[in-house]
Amino acid sequence: MENLNVLQLDFGFEVKPVLAKEKVVKRTKKHKSDFVFDFMDCLASPIIVFKSAWQDSIPKDILGRIKISRLICSLTKEKMASLTETLAYMMPRTYEAPMPTEWVNIYTWLGLQYAMQTKNNGQLEAMKDIATKELSDYEMVF
Image (tube, rainbow, N blue to C red):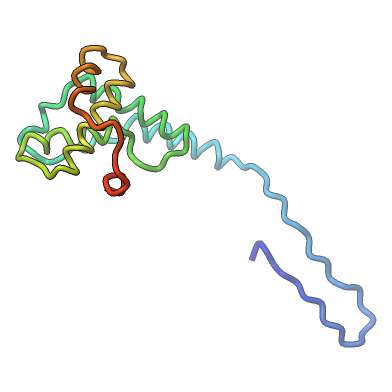
């Protein structure tokens, strides 16, 4: 009922027409409270990984960077998981069994993006040799 369209019909009565006033949106305290809840959500939410016997083998540096990458995604209004979080989720799955080519490309591309973010030269050189530089449109949908 915020955006009422008013139509004035003329029935021949002497009445002043009704004017529709534009609603002005004002900021409320809810905006600030949403930021606080989102911030706490980034810091306190559990890290979800693929359920596997290998789930404890994720390196601590990747797990430590997930909260920071969540904060960056929150500040950029990104609603999807961060690349670091996606990498951590997929890692235990890669140890279980061979994956289809598309998923291998996605996983290695995520590893390359992580190595470029952390600027770890040893990882970066190794990832440049094996990772795909760009994902296809089909792989981006996954």
